[in-house]
Length: 333
Image (cartoon, rainbow, N blue to C red):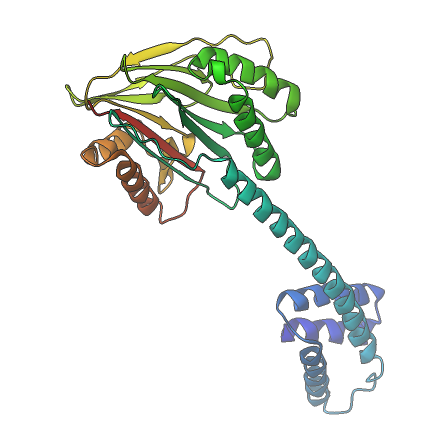
């Protein structure tokens, strides 16, 4: 900063250029970025004047003129400082709004546990930032039927939180369809298409489990395929589906699929934050994810998802590139 200021002042004393005065105001912005106080600028000015005197071996004849530069710097400092305070206030207001939205997001997530002897259930959802674009939902009815969903809102911040609110209340308002994944997605899609902007859309997978028939019905709206683990063969496979993302068109039909579960089998629902975890500059593949799931399959479902997240977080140096959601539903008996 010293040499920059010295060069600027020396140029002005030689040329009296208006352009140099403009440079002085730009200098004040750099000064503010480096947390220099006005007192430090006065001291800097004094030091430069003294050096110029020594270099010329005489008093600086334009000593009074040098204060033109100092005046411009201080004026620029005042303006930049005022702008800085305004930006800081706006940032604090935005942080406050994001905190409220994050709390609202958290309140939308189910808080109760799935307590059923025939089923082991676990879920983890961790945002990459303060706000999350992921949403999950689950419920259990009086007959022990379980509904579960994972969704990813393409968008962040407050609009994403509002979309999640819409998803939750739309699902809650369709109790008769919560065991019919395809019908539920079709109705949910019509709600979403009417109420979100054209540049937003939502991927979602929804499934329902019948503990008496041991059958998992599921449908997808452009979401990551869920995984099925077969305990007898100790193998994983993707349960691939077809379906357009929510919100693109209100006239979409969704297909419904099912998978029977034997004791020890489990279903894995996940967001793309799981499949897009990175080791250095490369995405991990689905084989690496299934290896982790197999490594911890002896644990209860909740501990399993916690351990898988812990390992994937560790290999990314504890820096998530995307929101992470992982849900497991396992048949016990």
